[in-house]
Every structure is written in structure tokens, then in C-alpha cells.
Image (cartoon, rainbow, N blue to C red; front, side, top):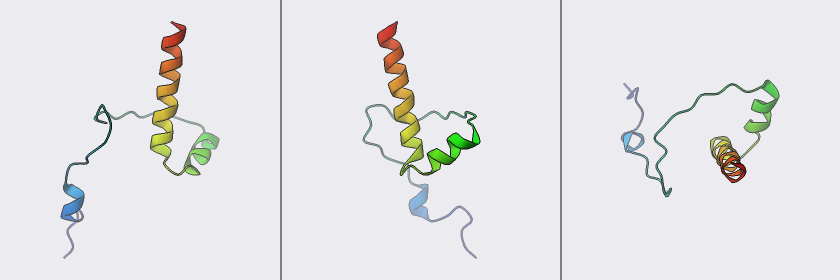
Length: 63
């Protein structure tokens, strides 16, 4: 019977090259069009993280 939790390699902690670890989760609602456009990107989560970070940086500059 297969392991329902997957392979043991998948259970190892994820290592990142980032300065700050990705430890928090965020859920947001988007339009259907936005979701379809995001799904065409190579790495949709990274695309969203970059877009949010750029907006936060821009907001800091204007404050």
C-alpha cells in the first residue's frame, strides 16, 4: 500500500536561498482573468511575491 503522505524526500524541510525565510501564508481573492494570466507564468507564486514586494518598496519611497 503506498504512503498517503508521499515520498520521505518530500517530508524534509524546504531550504531557501532567501535572506528571510518564507514562513507565512497569505490568501487573497483575484479575478478570473487575473488567475488565468497568473497561471501562464513560469512560477506564479514567485511572480506574486515579487509584485507585492515591488509595491511595498514603492509605497515606502512615497511615504
